[in-house]
Length: 254
Image (tube, rainbow, N blue to C red):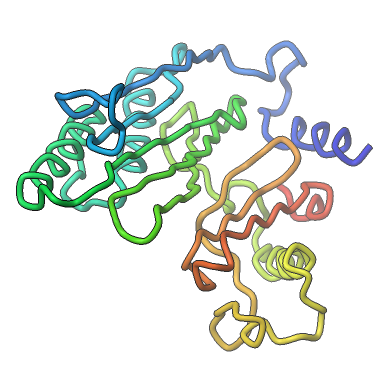
């Protein structure tokens, strides 16, 4: 029942006022694409001696060309592994440089074992006339004791191409009540008592007070805040997902 309530509430808060049910969803569609590049020798025979870069992503149609380009640029920036030198580069360029870096590494250290890979799966969470929300889940290995992973979000207004933020959804003053609910959800997920210290449970927050981060996305049942590994806790603790259902904060929605 809660899921149904959340979906219905979501439908009412993220569509333009005065539209009929048939018009609530914009005339936007998408097709999932797959981009892959690998070492010239190929990875079919020996994945331990090659590099591969692969991204599954949505390609939108029905959007203004400038908005479609903005989404593409945002996604390419997100699948660049945080490389500042990748700003403005295409997915193809990023992938080619990843493979080239591995090949250069193997030339310098031919005795090293293990290949490199980068995989990203970009899923469409929400498409309305005011919001397109995407989740980027990445998984990679570039040597070392273990690989890495991360989850990030892209939230775009499909009409303007501008970023869709919490300020666009909530009334002024929402920060404190939203943080309070987030604290409750975080403690429940991590099984930490209400009165217990977060820092003493190995979660690092300034002044031992829970804080929502800026890595959030929108789903049909609520807003998700994602804390990646190392962000607030040691690697062994893993990531933390905090999902705040819309019905718990409906009084603050515009």
